[in-house]
Length: 322
Image 1 (cartoon, helix red, strand yellow):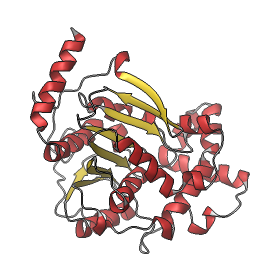
Image 2: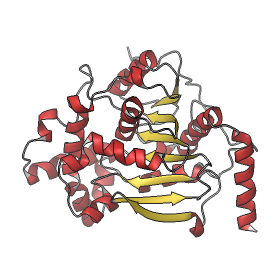
Image 3: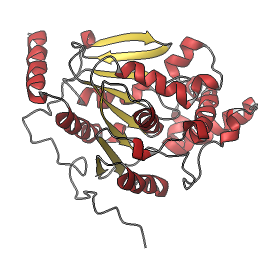
Image 4: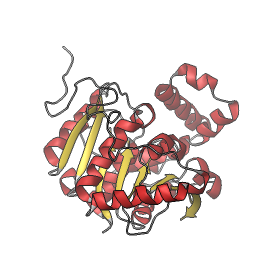
């Protein structure tokens, strides 16, 4: 018999998710596509960063953190759906533009500790709700549990693995691999195998050969950061996460992610547990509006004067478009 979602999940069918659909609302869920002037590219700590919809530093916003073998561009749909709030997306260390900037990385560069420090730098820029997808959620949880900056308002995480937990099932790297010499051909094979699982054989074959080659090169990052997050130095207790948190699971979430969700329900005191109906692991791509609803709902809870700020942002957007 198939396992059933926890009772706290909302699995009623809807257009997008287990949360109420926004399609028929005329309130604060309006989606506004960014204009060219909204986009500001920057580098901080060697990271390739894109900021959408700049605003004063006291205006709350979102930082979106991608998972393993991914990049900031996968967060574009979600970033657009979060209008009119300021949003920051970035290529994590060892991936895409951040890898191109550095030219190469070593194991310590992509350790869990350094990923957390990068995220903290971005959160310090303004009051922030962090959205973390998959391993990006693990990094966000680790930051909140170990060294949350004062500007952190809350977390929204989607299918975040907990590889340092002794009960966590199979993982993409073993802790001992963090210090091991890795054969380049072996690294590339593992990276390709991971991508084929994530996006499917047909989609992998459709990628240009140059894109396939760049993804294979990122296999070093995948293995080393995975090994680091599974090691004792990255271990953290979810009980230490005290910020308001929303943890979400796709309707077709894997067994290990369902285990993780149940664990967080038992250990994070201020948790909202949700399920996005019709979604697999890539909810930020397939259901960006549903994920945006979760993010904005949490922001509405945690940001002081939320509705006044929202009205001001909408007004400024209308003035900019006049």
